[in-house]
Length: 359
Image (tube, rainbow, N blue to C red; front, side, top):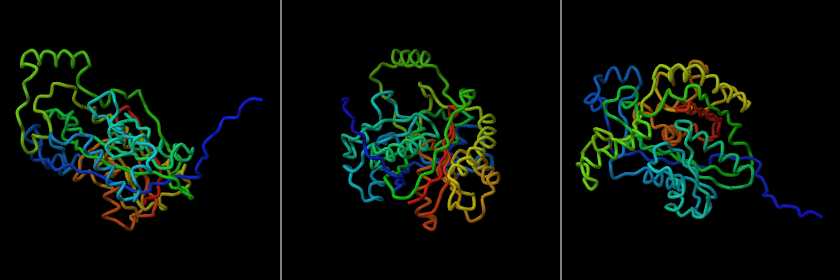
């Protein structure tokens, strides 16, 4: 007779148990940005809705921000580090291809030996992480999962680049997803459109990067250090020697406005609810005009609180939705316990959306 394999006992449902976030200390204003590109405060506000953005100083790493956000989420839930069964970090700005940021974060937070891994899905990374954490919990492989969206985009900015640099900020947001007796996370709507793979990307190939770094090392000496920078300049290089971000703004804008509204409506359908059932809308904080257009297309009633964290925080990629969620819970406690539609979209091009019940 063949042996029968054991299987874990699944959980009926999952939900978000708590949130946390970390915002850096360096404030970069539109006036600061206009030192680097030929623009104005008025133009930036009209085109993007951004007034300021937070960026990390040179002594604050991506891991530092992840750990701070994770600690805040633990405090919010009252869970102990040993009760976390998996750690997922969504980021595209960890400077190491391997090992993962998640493994270091798990160790720093005292969650060893929890499995830990990173997701590279740009601005949809957090929503991808929620989809995976939901599956891990409902399958029984985990009871509690820490999901962190974190970016130090200032490490990959060329100040003089006009298509994306002025949009970007740094930060980290975290949620803990655990087992629930009632549904707290809807089926995820997620996917990609690789035909627009080049719409958001980086300026140099790996060959150019390698040759550029080698040439710089030979010219300057491998032991030479960069001069210290203060204020807003401390958050980014003046003449980056590595790949920096850029985008085809019009392509991304059109795709986000028209295609992502469809995906948001599909997420509502998958959740079995109407827009009027929502307490909050948490879109990726890419551009205020995109957010406003999605609100219009979804026909959200005035009762729905819309996250507009971008005005103060800029676009923080994978960190934007969990940071906005944490802030909304504190500033609008009336949404707590209500339903929120969250949708992330960005480089790839990739997208992910769910309806979640706010803790």
